[in-house]
Image (cartoon, rainbow, N blue to C red):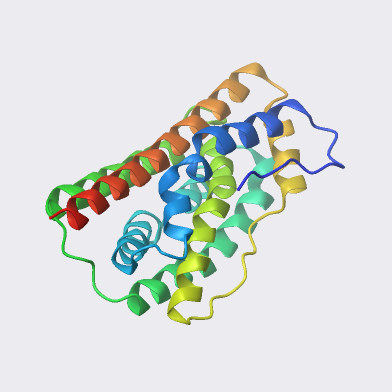
Length: 221
């Protein structure tokens, strides 16, 4: 899924850059996402993805919570508060689906995989608590943008197992774009924002690559 910037936004650069990064380097661009949404996707692979996403993003406090707690940019507070409230519902969706899809499928190297995901979680928390002005906001915004692609995998999983989940209510594109424009008024925070965004997307790519490798190991065992 490619997310386009809001046409009414006067912002241009910053928002468009993060959207392009997410489209090219985020979850939507990884083949494992498309594979999991296919009609013939193996349910053990779907279940593995749900449990992995729950481990990475299903615990409180998460990336956005940490970003709000450390936020030093007053203009970003409202956006962060909205995102925190919205992701509380997403956390409930993850818990509901993790319970509904059944146990984690048996896979070689399970302990190593779990350690990798926990390391990714720690890396995301570190970004969200960065003292470098703009970094945590860039991480939070990229996460919100990339979560939409992750959410599509969860929605497809919910459809397949007959579970109803709540709608997505994260901040809209125009609000996110406004926050980005505010941060980008100064070159230092703008660079830090882009760094934070790139690092979040890199961690998400790493998760999908791990899930892909686990599927190969499991299905060829």
